[in-house]
Length: 381
Ligand SMILES: *Cc1c(COP(=O)(O)O)cnc(C)c1O
Image (cartoon, rainbow, N blue to C red; front, top):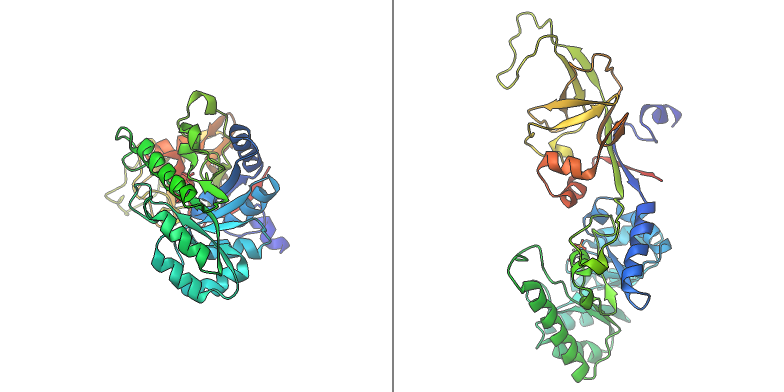
């Protein structure tokens, strides 16, 4: 174990890692609570391995930070959080099957119901009792009952005898078609129509939830009595109305590796430079173990660079599956084993998530999701 620890920074061998600051999760949940007030429950959406921050550590931390519940797209990830000790209520977005009901009962996971067929199929497989959420399709044409159908589906849940209605939720899609005037407002209005239909039918619905990160910041009227932001909890901000502007702290604070080879290209006697390579006089080449197989984009932008010894070093294409070239010519003291910074500080320079996103020609939230499972997550404070 000691030998391993001396190779990587904290007990793994491949010297490529992300640094996640879990105190950012505390901060961001506290900010969300200060915006919505105590009457509103905060379910943290854990999709994408908690936006790339690692589902288990984020689930446990969110519990301590006062989250009311968790939501998952992937049931396997939800189970891993339960097994790691998370006791928060868990809602599963669509992604599992009624025949798996005994597993959901064992792990206390609440599935999504959209249709009368769902109610029948789940009820037939449930042993004693299972809490469920009904989703309202407010105009995304994805999962959920349309507003005029929701009372009928909810009535079937209540009458089933073994399903308990824990709440209803919706998801006003803003990323697709958000530019169309009124699209988001229309979806919120449709969600309200569904809730009113439930009220008229006299069906009690403990939780009513439709705000993801973007809605939480842009539509304060849509808090109802629960919200389910994901990316915001990881510190990825979105456009906010003035009363919802807050400082969000990114949980992803580092993406780093180390030079695993350094060589001079001066004496390549008789070996021609490859067609993709522009050889400079006195050129020194470095290699870093990070590539497209780890989430780096396949194409390198002309401004792509890293930090080494407090200086900027250009990356050289092509990008390989698990290796990148670095032009070390202007950093003559660079050595085998030196730290290579994609996100983080080096001397007087710093690269932020936004800087890397700009180099990658990606929105910042995609950087979080892109960095693959092959890259170790290290938790720092
Ligand atoms: C993904 C998702 C969320 C969270 O979205 P963010 O943009 O990460 O806040 C909330 N609700 C549903 C139904 C989702 O699918």
